[in-house]
Length: 118
Image (cartoon, rainbow, N blue to C red):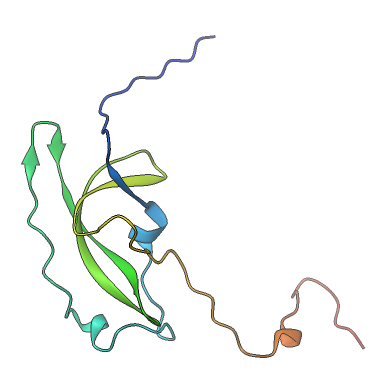
């Protein structure tokens, strides 16, 4: 048995973003910049065709104080975990990959598969 690995494309000194950040969209309870849900973000960068292929336009939500705001990014190649960002983000910006919404009463959370305590 032999295992082969082919490298079809590579990038050096590239800005990467987690694929989780590219998939995340805020729930109705998430704290986002007012009116950000209604498409007030900048228009996505145009799709560009390069020698190695085509870049894609995506949306990433970044931390903006106590809120999150959408940023349009042009993406490149992906390894399945991270994706190259061609434009739209700067190094050091914090991308949102999920949200935690608490109810204030952690004791009320229980496993539905366990019997109820008496």
